[in-house]
Image 1 (tube, rainbow over the protein chains, first blue to last red):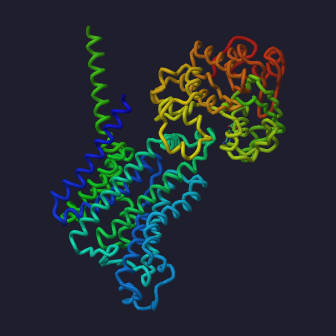
Image 2 (cartoon, chains in turn purple, blue; image 1 turned 45 degrees about the vertical axis):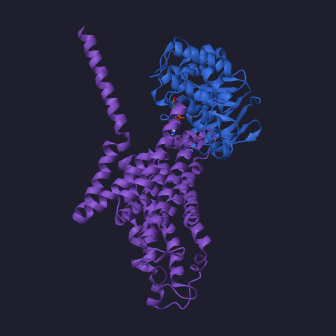
Image 3 (cartoon, rainbow over the protein chains, first blue to last red; image 1 turned 60 degrees about the horizontal axis):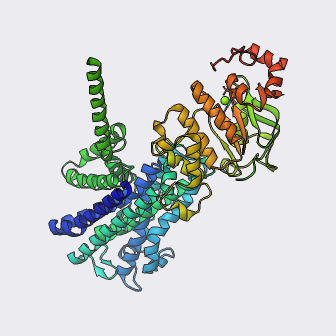
Length: 360
Length: 257
Ligand SMILES: Nc1ncnc2c1ncn2[C@@H]1O[C@H](COP(=O)(O)OP(=O)(O)OP(=O)(O)O)[C@@H](O)[C@H]1O
Ligand SMILES: [Mg+2]
């Protein structure tokens, strides 16, 4: 009975989200606003992974920019090669002028199938490699957070250093086409938006399945007491690795779809600050709840656009404050607000009943 | 169910930075025994269990069902059929009783099973719920259970894990008299099919339920035998007389300090 009820509610939720994303938003928003929403939805895709790894698995992934960047650059490299046309070098390489032909590690990305697969599989492979090392060494808590952050920073710094082949600080800019479609055409921009919206719903469905599976329960158990899980005969390192790798794949896909939506990927979008921003949205909305994390990510990304235009300096502080307030006073984020209030009300009611009972 | 297996410990030694917590202990627990491991605070009881379960490095030999355990990782040892509880109950507080048991039952599950929902209550889990008397609370978060119920849940988790050897670290600490009685009877039932080792301070409890007793003191094995034999051992009396809980072994039960 409750199961049916839960299922029905889930379907209703997905249907509602689909109507909102596919019908209402394109009708109500200008092309410009819709483009911004596409960008926010990419952030939300990262948040889905963070919800899984951090909210459920307790892994404070402060370095998702690394995987977002890997996916983004994989996509952008292909699009730059395609923009340049057969036989030509991408524009920035001609500009910096040292290379006469495509570097060897760029070449496979000329193949669209390879590039598309790489946007997801490359971040996952890197996460698997890093994760198996990190978790087997039992690096946990704040150490894990700092390490993941350092990795994102290192990647950004490396990109900046390789100007001739990565575009350096500028990144890969001015991307024109998307698998044969001109990105300047608003119709095609819309299509990109639809692809992103569909991808987000798909990731949410995937994460939901994982969270409600036996694996999802085990993941929470690992978060609760890793040692105990080990004594039950599981290897917690593997359990955490799965969540970490899946979250990385989601961030990679988000990065890949971010590129056609925005037309650029650069180190500034994947370093320390953006990595923290990915987490803030999930924290504010509620890291353990998919809906909370997704809405939080969209909300914070929207607030950033709205507020940072007018108060660019204040935004950074405000954002930091938001993070701290959420973690300190509402660890479950806004998603837990209902439950917290309900419990408080119940407690007050109980206290009132007791008081009445004592008075009588 | 698989046969209970025995535990053979030979010259076990555990040191922490020069301090030897377990100092050459020999212990032979036969299959199906209900062995009590007693000794004053700091005797090395918990450390011995830590060594057997792979939590601390140890020298010597620990054989279980004939296979050497020392040097294996914690989860491998667990999979060979050894389960333990801790001095402070550790259940997964945010999961329900049912989820706790289901996870304990599932270390051998396939990836495919792991990725799907749990649609029913697995048979062994239902049986364990019955055994530990928590069927009615199956849907409650483990964090809301009373202290004694958490201990039972932990024991239930070992049952569904289908371990052949249970190592229980002070399972009745903090329980009421009735709860102790219920736990003791539970352990007797369990030891019909499995080997059970219980670390305990409560001498009353030991007298009522122990089939054999080993006394540990300052990292060494002091005495071993039936309850009566151990109680009659002058060495044991001496250790406990010099200790705060003077009458515990020979006389009335004294609660752990
Ligand atoms: N990780 C550790 N590092 C250093 N010393 C330790 C460690 N663990 C235990 N000890 C020491 O080893 C000795 C034995 O401890 P252990 O916990 O095994 O005693 P116990 O018999 O279980 O006592 P209790 O009845 O109080 O639980 C104690 O002196 C303790 O301080
Ligand atoms: Mg102890």
